[in-house]
Image (tube, rainbow, N blue to C red; front, side, top):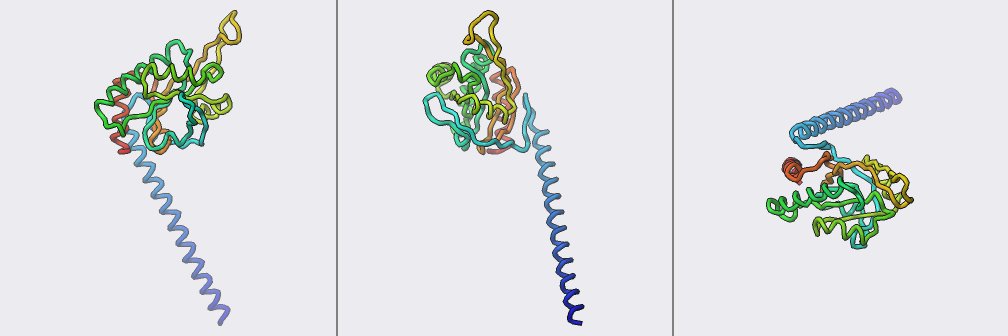
Length: 224
């Protein structure tokens, strides 16, 4: 009788534990589905010229150097919104026109938003062989003194590009030396939220008015 009673008690506890496990799994599935539905609803609500990421994408840390010689890492993306794009100082059209539009956007936002909500604007060089710190500083500050230019060695740059789905390719000029080349590269702007996660990709060509509208819409909906 004692063994039978013990077995019954054991089976009872197994049943309780199984029911608890099933309940936990069920709750996880329920809240997971609810979270996905909410994310989809937010994405459908936000209409931007680009792609809104309802579940922001995290990235691993990186180490670059900014245009005044300071270390620039993932930590520098935290606590504020950041607009980041990849380019180079010898770029013929895409980079200067993008920076010019970003400057117009930034000056408009300065009139409409408090300083705490202004985005940090960062240009990451895809040409670290030629883009020295001094050159990056002269280039980005020509467009706006608040803009930041960053560079790193090729492996570090490639690693960050891969994480953000950025592609670039060196194109050698016909009949010219090894130093005479241009670079074709992705032109999207990545919008990082204050948690240093990718919240949106803004499509090229970039227009100041559209970026102002897109940024304010995302800011309003995410309430960050």
